[in-house]
Amino acid sequence: MAFPKGRSPNPDGRRLEAAVRRTARAEAERCIAALARVRDDDCAPPEVRLAASAKILALGGYPKAQPASGL
Image (cartoon, rainbow, N blue to C red; front, side):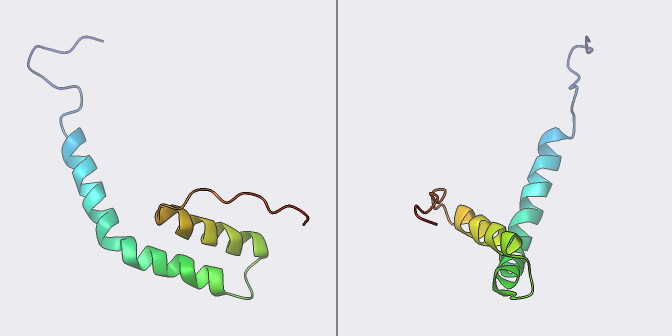
């Protein structure tokens, strides 16, 4: 598909991406706190608690956990 010279096929693309990044940064602390609440909720299914724990570690830059042997 050809676009007229000087016209962008995605004129709001970069501005929209920047707005999404700003919103994510503003909400990051609350989102991580929500993950921690799920992780600590004894009524939550174990697989959900494990997923929340893994996501918290991933957000902190930790590598993926290796499966424990002998379990």
